[in-house]
Image (spheres, chains in turn blue, red, yellow, brown):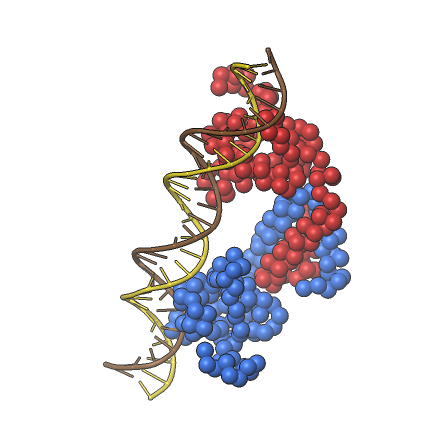
Length: 141
Length: 141
DNA sequence: ATTTTTGTATTATATCACTAATACACTGGT
DNA sequence: ACCAGTGTATTAGTGATATAATACAAAAAT
């Protein structure tokens, strides 16, 4: 807690800044997953980069190592990272991580859920397409 | 329980057939919500129709009345049904249930969640639009 | 008014999700 | 061989969620 003298400088060897919000209602392990996903999505983490170690991040975030491990584990299941026991956890190549059919299945599942949920509010698929297109134009994140 | 002599005929005064799957991992009250939402979406239930009574359905489904009440209550919060104490629960007019700005906000929120989730799997908004369009063509539910 | 039919509130219980304590196991450098 | 670093497994505790038991309250029919 006394390295905070040099504010705004690179945080030691930590490859990514992760912050937990205890009051968000979102479980820690999920917050970690989301932040890593985002970091990968916007290029802050590239294939091959090592993630913070389970123990190191656990100390940083004042959280049990298992909580970090759980997040990393889920990310590995999704193919976003690759873990080597005794060595570390690394961002994997997204392209080879998931087969095309896997991607297709996942997308299909996501879309079904989305459509069903939206339908419950009276939205048609047409509505969704239109809104998504507008969303796309605006270039929002 | 002895009206089941006439099989295949309209089920008493029950306006809709609801089935619970105990092994689905989806809570009963949520299964009920989903099935009513779908019935409304595809026209089996129209504005003004009365839903099964809390008690009646509870007996039918072998479930506590509170479980039915909870489902109906959530549906009322979403504006899909309207409840009168001592009288019953009825499908409400979707149009007047939500204002346009409400609908817009809800849709926006749904889309954001969907896009963010899909992005975590590496899908672009363009991917989503294309898949949704295909989905639409096929006329799937 | 009374009874019956309807939804509602209160309280308790079981199950599950999340996190932590603690101990284990693999890998690489020395 | 050892040791320091890494991820992992087992077990337990806490809190939230889902459901039920039971009692209450409003509306309509008689």
